[in-house]
Length: 456
Image (cartoon, rainbow, N blue to C red; front, side, top):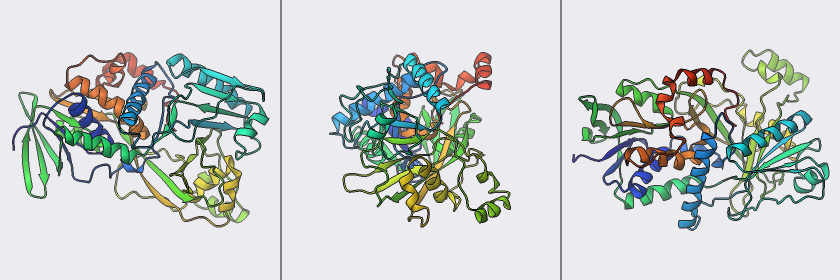
């Protein structure tokens, strides 16, 4: 086979975005995507499809790259006629604890200092608070609005539990159709010469320490594709593919599962933002259920406080009743296996958690609705910052460890990766996402004392 300029392993959203930014924006020709599965079918289509520029430090690297990624999303939405239905409804964090309201304020002040936009506090009913629009993304505020007046909260968010004492509406956030975005990027890439080969990468050849070819096993047999540049965009298989180069990347996986159900009762308004409960939750169980859970070593933890962060949002166009919801209460590292093994109790647990924030969902607890359950894996680094840039083997690159934020970050990460391959100027945040950051002793010490990672 004729040599190609770049071979990309993985046709998930990271690989497709990389192909787009190399071929369309970077004007490289003869780029090839290799994947044994159809595009966007392993974990990229299991997302809640949201985005945000709301990230903690240290430093402003995450906010800066997310602002860049959202800028690119908005450019793509404009040029495509918003084919992937980008909105900017925002993320709404809600709490029943006054101490958490103080944390909201501090987090918003920190985010403002990092470039996420200003904090606007609304402590009275007479307020300049501007609700988000249900559709579209233009002419919306950035930053965040902190609402602490009970009547103001009830006026705008009457579906929240009555004991809510504060909400933080983060504004440069929302969601879109990840599948439509991915297909748009893929179509544009193909129009600029990108090819998709169905097969699995089984080896990487090097000559003099430099990538010289990629061995691919396809239905027609094995072949070697000559190339001087190889990009690993293998999602949850990132670490496995890197071992073909003799590299052990500092990446692990967490299970990620969501549910979708029909909210016929209308408990979640169709115009609602992404809704996140910021308090730990102790679920209410009957005496019989408590006894059953206490007798199970695997289930006993469900009697204690479960982590904050259960969240969900309405899904679909006008007329839809679908709601997506998830709760990452089990964060143990796991080895990626497919099909995903899902706890049969998960849908009930998520609904119980969501009902703490939105009491109207309690109607479904006596008879659970039919839930569609799917999921994948968060491939992540210890501090939850992705990898994008060159690897120690000359001609090898990586884009991955995008955790649960792959759709929102894919364009920013791919733009950064393309700058390396196309030898374009790098942004100030580039070093924060290089693998070699782990060689810095000061950075190692920083990771050891890392606090909030921004993971929902």
